[in-house]
Image 1 (cartoon, rainbow, N blue to C red):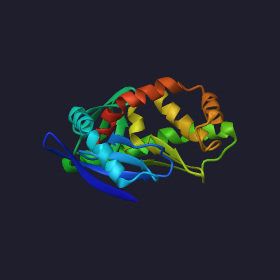
Image 2 (cartoon, helix red, strand yellow):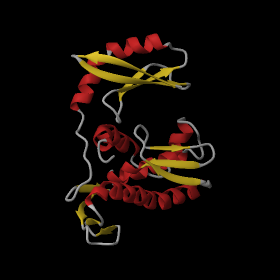
Image 3 (spheres, one colour):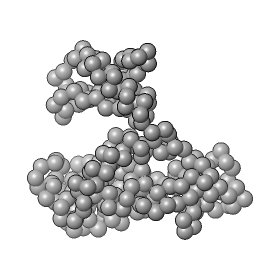
Length: 232
Protein backbone atom coordinates (compact mmCIF):
# COMPACT_ATOMS: atom_id res chain seq x y z
CA UNK A 1 0.00 0.00 0.00
CA UNK A 2 1.12 3.59 -0.62
CA UNK A 3 0.34 6.95 0.93
CA UNK A 4 1.27 10.53 0.05
CA UNK A 5 1.66 13.62 2.20
CA UNK A 6 3.37 16.99 1.83
CA UNK A 7 6.17 18.74 3.69
CA UNK A 8 7.43 22.30 3.30
CA UNK A 9 10.79 24.02 3.45
CA UNK A 10 11.45 27.69 2.75
CA UNK A 11 7.97 27.99 1.28
CA UNK A 12 8.51 25.11 -1.16
CA UNK A 13 5.99 22.25 -1.17
CA UNK A 14 7.46 18.76 -1.52
CA UNK A 15 5.27 15.66 -1.86
CA UNK A 16 6.52 12.57 -0.04
CA UNK A 17 5.32 9.12 -1.03
CA UNK A 18 5.30 6.44 1.66
CA UNK A 19 6.49 3.03 0.57
CA UNK A 20 5.49 0.45 3.16
CA UNK A 21 8.01 -2.38 3.34
CA UNK A 22 8.05 -5.79 5.01
CA UNK A 23 11.86 -5.89 4.74
CA UNK A 24 12.88 -2.41 5.91
CA UNK A 25 14.17 -2.15 9.47
CA UNK A 26 14.13 1.64 9.74
CA UNK A 27 12.70 4.77 8.13
CA UNK A 28 14.66 5.74 5.01
CA UNK A 29 14.02 8.97 3.07
CA UNK A 30 15.41 9.44 -0.42
CA UNK A 31 14.80 11.82 -3.28
CA UNK A 32 12.13 10.72 -5.75
CA UNK A 33 13.68 10.66 -9.23
CA UNK A 34 10.29 11.04 -10.89
CA UNK A 35 8.97 14.09 -9.02
CA UNK A 36 10.00 17.16 -7.05
CA UNK A 37 9.64 15.28 -3.80
CA UNK A 38 10.74 12.25 -1.85
CA UNK A 39 10.09 8.57 -1.19
CA UNK A 40 9.98 7.40 2.42
CA UNK A 41 10.45 3.68 3.02
CA UNK A 42 8.61 2.70 6.17
CA UNK A 43 8.74 -0.67 7.99
CA UNK A 44 5.34 -2.16 8.73
CA UNK A 45 5.92 -1.78 12.46
CA UNK A 46 6.11 2.01 12.21
CA UNK A 47 3.19 4.43 12.07
CA UNK A 48 2.32 7.09 9.54
CA UNK A 49 2.69 9.71 12.30
CA UNK A 50 6.30 8.63 12.83
CA UNK A 51 6.90 8.71 9.07
CA UNK A 52 5.54 12.24 8.69
CA UNK A 53 7.59 13.50 11.66
CA UNK A 54 10.79 12.00 10.25
CA UNK A 55 10.17 13.55 6.82
CA UNK A 56 9.43 16.96 8.32
CA UNK A 57 12.67 16.82 10.29
CA UNK A 58 14.54 16.03 7.06
CA UNK A 59 12.83 18.70 4.93
CA UNK A 60 15.97 20.84 4.61
CA UNK A 61 18.00 17.84 3.43
CA UNK A 62 15.38 16.85 0.85
CA UNK A 63 15.08 20.42 -0.41
CA UNK A 64 18.86 20.64 -0.90
CA UNK A 65 18.95 17.32 -2.77
CA UNK A 66 16.15 18.38 -5.13
CA UNK A 67 17.68 21.83 -5.68
CA UNK A 68 21.13 20.47 -6.49
CA UNK A 69 20.21 17.52 -8.67
CA UNK A 70 21.11 17.64 -12.38
CA UNK A 71 18.61 19.07 -14.86
CA UNK A 72 16.76 16.57 -17.02
CA UNK A 73 18.45 15.81 -20.35
CA UNK A 74 16.03 14.94 -23.13
CA UNK A 75 17.13 13.50 -26.46
CA UNK A 76 17.70 15.93 -29.33
CA UNK A 77 19.58 16.28 -32.60
CA UNK A 78 23.27 16.58 -31.71
CA UNK A 79 22.90 15.11 -28.21
CA UNK A 80 25.93 12.97 -27.36
CA UNK A 81 25.19 9.77 -25.45
CA UNK A 82 27.81 7.60 -23.78
CA UNK A 83 26.96 4.01 -24.64
CA UNK A 84 29.22 1.75 -22.58
CA UNK A 85 31.84 4.55 -22.62
CA UNK A 86 31.56 5.04 -26.38
CA UNK A 87 30.35 8.53 -27.43
CA UNK A 88 27.41 8.33 -29.83
CA UNK A 89 25.83 11.45 -31.37
CA UNK A 90 22.11 11.54 -32.16
CA UNK A 91 21.54 12.72 -35.76
CA UNK A 92 18.03 13.53 -36.92
CA UNK A 93 17.57 12.54 -40.56
CA UNK A 94 13.87 13.15 -41.36
CA UNK A 95 14.27 12.05 -44.97
CA UNK A 96 15.50 8.58 -44.00
CA UNK A 97 13.10 5.63 -43.76
CA UNK A 98 15.18 3.30 -41.64
CA UNK A 99 13.79 4.12 -38.20
CA UNK A 100 16.77 4.25 -35.84
CA UNK A 101 20.14 2.91 -36.88
CA UNK A 102 23.51 2.93 -35.13
CA UNK A 103 26.10 3.91 -37.74
CA UNK A 104 29.53 3.99 -36.15
CA UNK A 105 29.55 6.89 -33.70
CA UNK A 106 26.18 8.24 -34.86
CA UNK A 107 22.63 7.21 -34.03
CA UNK A 108 20.58 8.08 -37.11
CA UNK A 109 16.93 8.80 -36.33
CA UNK A 110 14.42 9.15 -39.17
CA UNK A 111 10.91 10.56 -39.17
CA UNK A 112 9.42 13.76 -37.82
CA UNK A 113 11.12 15.71 -35.04
CA UNK A 114 8.25 15.25 -32.59
CA UNK A 115 8.82 11.48 -32.69
CA UNK A 116 12.56 11.63 -32.00
CA UNK A 117 12.24 11.28 -28.21
CA UNK A 118 10.13 8.15 -28.37
CA UNK A 119 12.16 6.56 -31.17
CA UNK A 120 15.48 7.03 -29.39
CA UNK A 121 14.01 5.79 -26.12
CA UNK A 122 12.55 2.66 -27.74
CA UNK A 123 15.82 1.95 -29.55
CA UNK A 124 17.88 2.34 -26.37
CA UNK A 125 15.63 -0.10 -24.51
CA UNK A 126 15.95 -2.65 -27.30
CA UNK A 127 19.70 -2.16 -27.62
CA UNK A 128 20.15 -2.56 -23.88
CA UNK A 129 18.39 -5.91 -23.99
CA UNK A 130 20.43 -7.01 -27.01
CA UNK A 131 23.64 -6.29 -25.07
CA UNK A 132 22.55 -7.73 -21.72
CA UNK A 133 20.81 -10.93 -22.83
CA UNK A 134 23.81 -12.88 -24.20
CA UNK A 135 26.03 -11.86 -21.28
CA UNK A 136 23.40 -12.90 -18.75
CA UNK A 137 22.86 -16.25 -20.50
CA UNK A 138 26.60 -17.02 -20.44
CA UNK A 139 26.81 -16.19 -16.73
CA UNK A 140 23.72 -18.26 -15.93
CA UNK A 141 25.22 -21.23 -17.80
CA UNK A 142 28.32 -20.95 -15.63
CA UNK A 143 26.11 -21.41 -12.57
CA UNK A 144 24.10 -24.20 -14.14
CA UNK A 145 20.99 -22.01 -13.95
CA UNK A 146 18.33 -21.05 -16.47
CA UNK A 147 16.86 -17.61 -17.09
CA UNK A 148 13.15 -17.71 -17.82
CA UNK A 149 12.83 -14.20 -19.23
CA UNK A 150 14.84 -10.98 -19.53
CA UNK A 151 13.11 -7.61 -19.65
CA UNK A 152 14.35 -4.02 -19.82
CA UNK A 153 12.31 -1.30 -18.14
CA UNK A 154 12.31 2.40 -17.31
CA UNK A 155 12.86 1.83 -13.59
CA UNK A 156 13.76 4.68 -11.25
CA UNK A 157 15.00 3.07 -8.03
CA UNK A 158 16.54 -0.26 -9.04
CA UNK A 159 19.19 -1.15 -11.60
CA UNK A 160 18.05 -4.73 -11.79
CA UNK A 161 15.98 -7.45 -10.17
CA UNK A 162 15.56 -11.22 -10.15
CA UNK A 163 12.30 -13.02 -9.40
CA UNK A 164 11.85 -16.41 -7.77
CA UNK A 165 10.70 -17.73 -11.14
CA UNK A 166 13.98 -16.81 -12.86
CA UNK A 167 12.88 -13.58 -14.53
CA UNK A 168 15.57 -10.91 -14.76
CA UNK A 169 14.77 -7.24 -15.21
CA UNK A 170 17.18 -4.37 -15.90
CA UNK A 171 17.02 -0.59 -16.19
CA UNK A 172 17.64 0.65 -19.74
CA UNK A 173 19.96 3.36 -18.42
CA UNK A 174 22.59 0.70 -17.76
CA UNK A 175 23.58 1.09 -21.41
CA UNK A 176 24.79 4.58 -20.42
CA UNK A 177 27.24 3.19 -17.86
CA UNK A 178 30.81 1.93 -18.43
CA UNK A 179 31.10 -1.64 -19.63
CA UNK A 180 32.53 -2.90 -16.32
CA UNK A 181 29.61 -1.39 -14.41
CA UNK A 182 27.08 -3.12 -16.64
CA UNK A 183 28.89 -6.43 -16.20
CA UNK A 184 28.69 -6.09 -12.42
CA UNK A 185 24.94 -5.46 -12.45
CA UNK A 186 24.37 -8.46 -14.72
CA UNK A 187 26.53 -10.66 -12.48
CA UNK A 188 24.64 -9.39 -9.43
CA UNK A 189 21.21 -10.30 -10.79
CA UNK A 190 22.32 -13.61 -12.31
CA UNK A 191 23.82 -14.59 -8.93
CA UNK A 192 20.35 -14.22 -7.43
CA UNK A 193 19.32 -17.23 -9.52
CA UNK A 194 21.42 -19.24 -7.06
CA UNK A 195 20.92 -17.15 -3.91
CA UNK A 196 17.82 -15.01 -3.36
CA UNK A 197 19.54 -12.95 -0.66
CA UNK A 198 22.69 -10.92 -0.08
CA UNK A 199 24.45 -13.34 2.22
CA UNK A 200 28.11 -14.44 2.06
CA UNK A 201 27.34 -17.23 -0.45
CA UNK A 202 25.70 -14.72 -2.77
CA UNK A 203 28.67 -12.35 -2.79
CA UNK A 204 31.04 -15.28 -3.26
CA UNK A 205 29.04 -16.23 -6.36
CA UNK A 206 29.25 -12.66 -7.70
CA UNK A 207 33.03 -12.78 -7.29
CA UNK A 208 33.27 -15.87 -9.52
CA UNK A 209 32.44 -13.62 -12.48
CA UNK A 210 35.53 -11.48 -11.78
CA UNK A 211 33.60 -8.21 -11.86
CA UNK A 212 34.68 -5.02 -10.13
CA UNK A 213 32.05 -5.09 -7.40
CA UNK A 214 33.21 -2.32 -5.05
CA UNK A 215 34.28 0.01 -7.85
CA UNK A 216 31.01 -0.50 -9.75
CA UNK A 217 28.84 0.06 -6.67
CA UNK A 218 30.74 3.26 -5.91
CA UNK A 219 30.32 4.47 -9.50
CA UNK A 220 26.59 3.78 -9.47
CA UNK A 221 26.08 5.58 -6.17
CA UNK A 222 27.98 8.60 -7.48
CA UNK A 223 26.28 8.77 -10.89
CA UNK A 224 22.76 7.49 -10.16
CA UNK A 225 21.09 10.92 -9.88
CA UNK A 226 22.68 12.10 -13.14
CA UNK A 227 21.69 8.99 -15.08
CA UNK A 228 18.12 9.08 -13.81
CA UNK A 229 17.75 12.57 -15.28
CA UNK A 230 18.52 11.35 -18.81
CA UNK A 231 15.55 10.59 -21.04
CA UNK A 232 11.86 10.28 -20.15
